[in-house]
Amino acid sequence: MIDRTRLASLYAAEQARFEATHPASKALFERARAHLLEGVPMHWMAKWAGGFPVFVAEGEGAHFTDVDGHRYLDLCLGDTGAMTGHAPAPTVDAVRAQAAKGFTFMLPSEDHLWVAEELSRRFGLPCWQFAMSATDANRFAIRLARMLTGRPRILVHNWCYHGTVDETFATLADGRVVPRPGNIGPAVDPAETTRVVEFNDLAALERELAHGDVACVLAEPAMTNIGIILPEPGYHDGLRALTRKHGALLIIDETHTICAGPGGYTRAHGLEPDVLTLGKPIGGGVPGAVYGFSAEVAARLAGKIALADCDTGGIGGTLAGNAFALAAMRATLEHVLTEEAYQRTIPLAERWAAGVESVVAEHGLPWIVKRLGCRAEYWFRPAPPRNGAEAAAAMDFELDRFMHLFALNRGILLTPFHNMALIAPATTEGDIDRHTAVFLEAVGALLGRSSL
Image (cartoon, rainbow, N blue to C red):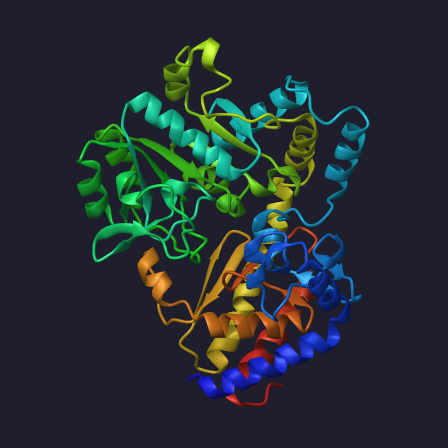
């Protein structure tokens, strides 16, 4: 239904509008090209639609303002890192107070204990450790799983994302494990370290675990980074039973699926992971992450790491668990990512999904919407994908970029990687309805129909 010539013309017009209305961002981008690779502080920021990213001046709650003075509704929220909203007051107050007392000591504080106790209450795992990012938490969990099991491989789902963990940048091609497209400088052939199966495929999972060389399965409870793919009924029961049967640890990565509730998908659906990892929003935007262990795994780890070697084992980091990050975590868990916050944000995500669905139905588009907690997303396909391969096949880079730039030019930021909206506690019904109106306008432009 999409005329590709019209799409290209519309995108060109939106890009011209973007450049004309963002002169300060463009000037900073041109200046940045002399000292930042591709003009951006992280290479993936080059993916923002429009030819250059907007440069941020400040943010608060569900909105931010750029250096050209434009104010945006932020539905990207740092791809979950700012799920709390920007500058949540309790977190700001806590880090301001901690900054005056010191940032890092390589020693514990009461905040470490408070956060661990709260995480245990939320997720049901009694023992916790700290890291600087979810990537590190996943990497450390994998190392520990290999040590405990004596096995070399891990298992992941096709088209998963677990941060920049080498072993997870693997995908399937004609049934073979190969480097995922875009995998920069893989250290080794991922077929040597990783087994890959499709999400929701219990038969494939059992086949690969039966080799007896898998130390752990690292999985999101619902896939999110290739789009929201929900588990089919019985999948998690089967995943848990098969990992136990074949002696592999089960690591659940809640970094995105914390959108499901204050205890993530794990608490909402009664999962029983051996290890759980979580990063991004736990510090209200301040870098930090955690990983927790079941009582059984904690007992197996006790005394396993030699005291003389515990500082050089590839687990930890000088700034991991620093006092500044822990103050942010405590304040965020106690006052921001609360039951009350989710009671507000999840209905707003339902409203966002309903608004998009109403436009799709009005225009008879073969598109769908999926939601998980306070996260929702639209897809350019008529039926929900059940695995990563189906999701990847539905990706439409040019159409994504048009929808993102069209929204950006009208004051709404979506995540640059797919068509995801995340709802912050400060988001309002008016903000959601504004997105519905802009989405309707974009669809009308694509189809050459007037939008009322």
